[in-house]
Image 1 (cartoon, rainbow, N blue to C red):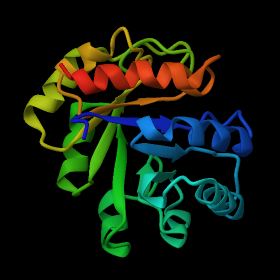
Image 2 (cartoon, rainbow, N blue to C red):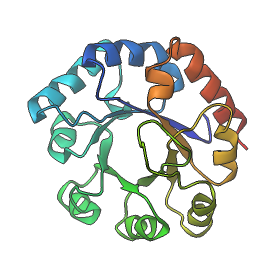
Image 3 (tube, rainbow, N blue to C red):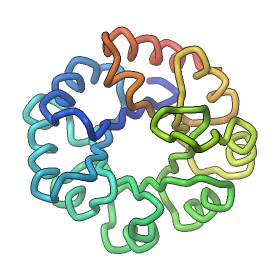
Length: 203
Protein backbone atom coordinates (compact mmCIF):
# COMPACT_ATOMS: atom_id res chain seq x y z
CA UNK A 1 0.00 0.00 0.00
CA UNK A 2 1.25 3.51 -0.83
CA UNK A 3 2.37 5.74 2.01
CA UNK A 4 0.91 8.78 0.26
CA UNK A 5 -2.67 9.23 -0.88
CA UNK A 6 -4.07 10.45 -4.19
CA UNK A 7 -7.38 12.32 -4.01
CA UNK A 8 -9.25 13.22 -7.21
CA UNK A 9 -11.69 16.14 -7.03
CA UNK A 10 -14.46 16.55 -9.58
CA UNK A 11 -14.20 19.73 -11.65
CA UNK A 12 -17.83 20.80 -11.49
CA UNK A 13 -17.68 21.42 -15.24
CA UNK A 14 -17.88 17.86 -16.55
CA UNK A 15 -21.04 15.81 -16.61
CA UNK A 16 -21.26 13.22 -13.86
CA UNK A 17 -21.31 10.57 -16.58
CA UNK A 18 -17.96 11.80 -17.90
CA UNK A 19 -16.53 11.94 -14.38
CA UNK A 20 -17.74 8.40 -13.70
CA UNK A 21 -16.23 7.11 -16.94
CA UNK A 22 -12.83 8.59 -16.08
CA UNK A 23 -13.08 7.43 -12.46
CA UNK A 24 -13.62 3.84 -13.51
CA UNK A 25 -10.58 3.95 -15.80
CA UNK A 26 -8.22 5.34 -13.14
CA UNK A 27 -9.59 4.03 -9.86
CA UNK A 28 -6.83 1.43 -9.47
CA UNK A 29 -4.42 4.32 -8.80
CA UNK A 30 -6.74 6.54 -6.75
CA UNK A 31 -7.46 6.43 -3.03
CA UNK A 32 -10.45 8.79 -2.92
CA UNK A 33 -12.83 10.55 -5.30
CA UNK A 34 -14.36 13.83 -4.10
CA UNK A 35 -17.71 14.91 -5.48
CA UNK A 36 -17.39 18.69 -5.41
CA UNK A 37 -20.47 19.67 -7.38
CA UNK A 38 -21.78 22.92 -5.93
CA UNK A 39 -24.49 23.22 -8.56
CA UNK A 40 -26.07 19.85 -7.71
CA UNK A 41 -29.02 19.40 -5.39
CA UNK A 42 -28.93 16.82 -2.62
CA UNK A 43 -30.93 14.44 -4.80
CA UNK A 44 -28.59 14.89 -7.75
CA UNK A 45 -25.56 14.24 -5.54
CA UNK A 46 -27.17 11.12 -4.13
CA UNK A 47 -27.88 9.92 -7.66
CA UNK A 48 -24.28 10.69 -8.62
CA UNK A 49 -23.02 8.50 -5.79
CA UNK A 50 -25.30 5.70 -6.93
CA UNK A 51 -23.99 6.05 -10.49
CA UNK A 52 -20.40 5.77 -9.31
CA UNK A 53 -21.33 2.78 -7.17
CA UNK A 54 -23.09 1.11 -10.10
CA UNK A 55 -20.00 1.68 -12.25
CA UNK A 56 -17.86 -0.12 -9.68
CA UNK A 57 -16.43 2.68 -7.55
CA UNK A 58 -16.55 1.53 -3.90
CA UNK A 59 -18.39 3.78 -1.46
CA UNK A 60 -15.24 3.59 0.66
CA UNK A 61 -13.52 5.70 -2.01
CA UNK A 62 -16.17 8.44 -2.26
CA UNK A 63 -16.08 11.72 -0.32
CA UNK A 64 -18.82 14.34 -0.61
CA UNK A 65 -18.00 18.03 -0.50
CA UNK A 66 -20.02 20.04 2.05
CA UNK A 67 -23.25 18.00 2.02
CA UNK A 68 -23.04 15.99 5.22
CA UNK A 69 -26.61 14.77 4.78
CA UNK A 70 -25.81 13.16 1.43
CA UNK A 71 -22.57 11.63 2.67
CA UNK A 72 -24.41 10.07 5.60
CA UNK A 73 -27.46 8.94 3.63
CA UNK A 74 -25.36 7.45 0.84
CA UNK A 75 -22.96 5.76 3.28
CA UNK A 76 -19.87 7.21 1.63
CA UNK A 77 -16.41 7.23 3.20
CA UNK A 78 -16.73 10.79 4.41
CA UNK A 79 -17.35 14.47 3.86
CA UNK A 80 -15.04 17.37 2.99
CA UNK A 81 -16.00 20.56 4.83
CA UNK A 82 -15.14 23.90 3.18
CA UNK A 83 -14.66 26.97 5.37
CA UNK A 84 -18.33 28.01 5.09
CA UNK A 85 -19.67 24.58 6.05
CA UNK A 86 -20.71 23.07 9.37
CA UNK A 87 -18.19 22.99 12.19
CA UNK A 88 -16.14 19.80 12.10
CA UNK A 89 -16.77 19.06 15.78
CA UNK A 90 -20.53 19.35 15.23
CA UNK A 91 -20.38 16.91 12.33
CA UNK A 92 -18.25 14.42 14.27
CA UNK A 93 -20.74 14.46 17.14
CA UNK A 94 -23.90 14.28 15.02
CA UNK A 95 -22.60 11.71 12.52
CA UNK A 96 -20.35 9.29 14.38
CA UNK A 97 -18.38 7.09 12.07
CA UNK A 98 -18.38 9.58 9.19
CA UNK A 99 -14.83 10.59 8.30
CA UNK A 100 -14.41 14.34 8.24
CA UNK A 101 -11.96 16.36 6.19
CA UNK A 102 -11.61 20.12 6.59
CA UNK A 103 -10.37 22.60 4.00
CA UNK A 104 -7.73 24.82 5.62
CA UNK A 105 -5.65 27.74 4.37
CA UNK A 106 -3.32 28.49 7.29
CA UNK A 107 -1.47 26.98 10.23
CA UNK A 108 -4.14 28.31 12.57
CA UNK A 109 -6.98 26.67 10.63
CA UNK A 110 -5.08 23.38 10.45
CA UNK A 111 -4.52 23.44 14.21
CA UNK A 112 -8.19 24.16 14.77
CA UNK A 113 -9.19 21.23 12.52
CA UNK A 114 -6.90 18.96 14.53
CA UNK A 115 -8.41 20.13 17.82
CA UNK A 116 -11.89 19.40 16.46
CA UNK A 117 -10.75 15.86 15.68
CA UNK A 118 -11.03 16.00 11.91
CA UNK A 119 -9.66 12.92 10.19
CA UNK A 120 -7.62 14.93 7.70
CA UNK A 121 -7.24 18.42 6.30
CA UNK A 122 -6.83 19.67 2.75
CA UNK A 123 -4.38 22.57 2.51
CA UNK A 124 -3.59 24.87 -0.39
CA UNK A 125 -3.21 26.13 -2.87
CA UNK A 126 0.45 25.18 -2.94
CA UNK A 127 1.43 26.32 -6.43
CA UNK A 128 -0.13 28.72 -8.93
CA UNK A 129 -3.28 27.26 -10.43
CA UNK A 130 -5.84 28.39 -13.00
CA UNK A 131 -8.65 27.51 -10.58
CA UNK A 132 -7.50 30.37 -8.29
CA UNK A 133 -6.82 33.28 -10.67
CA UNK A 134 -5.45 36.40 -9.02
CA UNK A 135 -4.62 34.61 -5.78
CA UNK A 136 -0.98 33.95 -5.01
CA UNK A 137 0.09 30.43 -4.01
CA UNK A 138 0.91 29.65 -0.40
CA UNK A 139 4.01 27.71 -1.33
CA UNK A 140 5.80 25.01 0.62
CA UNK A 141 6.98 27.02 3.62
CA UNK A 142 3.79 26.99 5.66
CA UNK A 143 3.05 23.43 4.55
CA UNK A 144 6.34 22.38 6.17
CA UNK A 145 5.44 24.27 9.34
CA UNK A 146 2.01 22.67 9.52
CA UNK A 147 3.19 19.13 8.95
CA UNK A 148 6.07 19.58 11.41
CA UNK A 149 3.88 20.69 14.32
CA UNK A 150 0.50 19.13 13.58
CA UNK A 151 -0.20 15.39 13.54
CA UNK A 152 -3.37 15.70 11.46
CA UNK A 153 -2.80 14.18 7.99
CA UNK A 154 -2.46 17.01 5.47
CA UNK A 155 -3.52 16.58 1.84
CA UNK A 156 -1.93 19.25 -0.35
CA UNK A 157 -3.80 20.79 -3.27
CA UNK A 158 -3.25 23.39 -5.95
CA UNK A 159 -1.06 23.28 -9.03
CA UNK A 160 0.55 19.99 -8.09
CA UNK A 161 2.05 18.13 -11.05
CA UNK A 162 4.14 14.98 -11.32
CA UNK A 163 7.18 17.24 -11.74
CA UNK A 164 6.71 19.05 -8.40
CA UNK A 165 4.87 16.36 -6.44
CA UNK A 166 8.02 15.06 -4.73
CA UNK A 167 8.65 18.54 -3.27
CA UNK A 168 5.21 18.47 -1.68
CA UNK A 169 5.83 15.06 -0.15
CA UNK A 170 9.20 16.19 1.21
CA UNK A 171 7.36 19.08 2.85
CA UNK A 172 5.41 16.52 4.87
CA UNK A 173 2.11 16.13 3.02
CA UNK A 174 0.33 12.82 3.57
CA UNK A 175 -0.97 12.98 0.03
CA UNK A 176 -2.08 15.23 -2.79
CA UNK A 177 -5.36 16.25 -4.41
CA UNK A 178 -5.66 16.77 -8.15
CA UNK A 179 -8.49 18.07 -10.28
CA UNK A 180 -7.88 19.25 -13.85
CA UNK A 181 -4.38 17.77 -14.00
CA UNK A 182 -5.98 14.36 -14.41
CA UNK A 183 -9.67 14.84 -15.16
CA UNK A 184 -9.11 17.33 -18.01
CA UNK A 185 -5.98 15.66 -19.38
CA UNK A 186 -5.95 14.24 -22.89
CA UNK A 187 -4.97 10.89 -21.35
CA UNK A 188 -6.18 10.70 -17.71
CA UNK A 189 -4.80 7.19 -17.25
CA UNK A 190 -1.32 8.22 -18.37
CA UNK A 191 -1.37 11.21 -16.02
CA UNK A 192 -2.66 9.29 -13.01
CA UNK A 193 0.11 6.73 -13.50
CA UNK A 194 2.66 9.54 -13.51
CA UNK A 195 1.34 10.92 -10.21
CA UNK A 196 1.07 7.45 -8.73
CA UNK A 197 4.67 6.68 -9.60
CA UNK A 198 5.88 9.67 -7.57
CA UNK A 199 3.57 8.79 -4.67
CA UNK A 200 4.94 5.24 -4.70
CA UNK A 201 8.53 6.43 -4.55
CA UNK A 202 7.66 8.96 -1.87
CA UNK A 203 10.25 11.52 -0.89
